[in-house]
Amino acid sequence: MSFRNYGFWTTSEAPVEVYNEPNLARNTDREFPGYNLSIRDQVRYRIWLEEFRRYKASGEMPSAQFVRFSNDHTCGTDPACPTPQAMMADNDWAMGKLIDKVSHSEFWDSTAIFVIEDDAQDGPDHVDAHRTVGYVVSPYTQTSEVDSTFYSSASMLRTMEMVFGLAPLTYFDATASPLLNSFTDEPDFGAYNAVKPAQPLGEMNQPEAPMARASSRMDFSREDIAPWHTLNRAIWKGVKGAGSKMPAPQHNLSIEEEEEEE
Image (cartoon, rainbow, N blue to C red; front, side, top):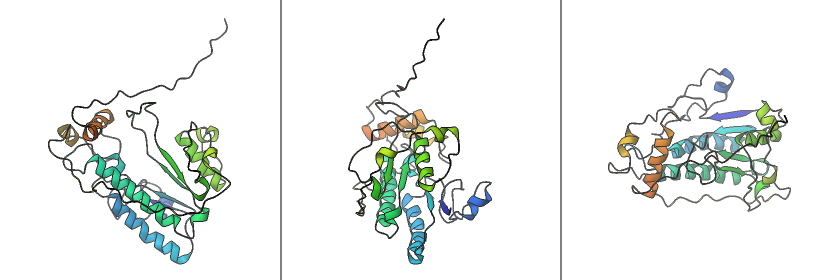
């Protein structure tokens, strides 16, 4: 199957280099920046759009595309960066515009777009710190309902494998529950119209922002090397206010072990 890579396993600035994988390098857009929080996701979207327009002109598109919009990581309240709200809005706006373009194209009736964060970052979710968001956008998922089935990241991978008729890669995706409850056999081919966020994308953190000094000392040059508990608190206070207290991470998933008979 054909595929195209935008931003995964690459260096941070264009023209990007790909890490130790010749086949991935041949199928990577070298103008699409990798993880680099100083580059807006709007820039990444526009670079992706250039190739997508060529796909439309030719009537052919790779079977799979892997697109990385990374600014939802945020820089906490580092004064050198936009606010967490602005970086999230930048990320949402880029994703929304991508879905808008695809859903208005001739490719829409045979497309599914899977969206997930890279990890939950042990955050203050009131149910469990492992929980994260996941979206599947397709004519075959327009049920107007939230699917509350217990899934994992491997469930999303398993579903994509099933779409392409691929065998599982590991034990974990082989045993994962696919996202079957998210799909319907009554498709809705209506297009999605992206809504521009009201949040200004250029809003910057101020020097007096909560935990600004702590955030400025963090290393954001690569994903997930900043101390996540401190970063979580900085994001929480930056959004909720300096006097707010982030709830402690919840770890409620447990596996009951049967007692062995003596």
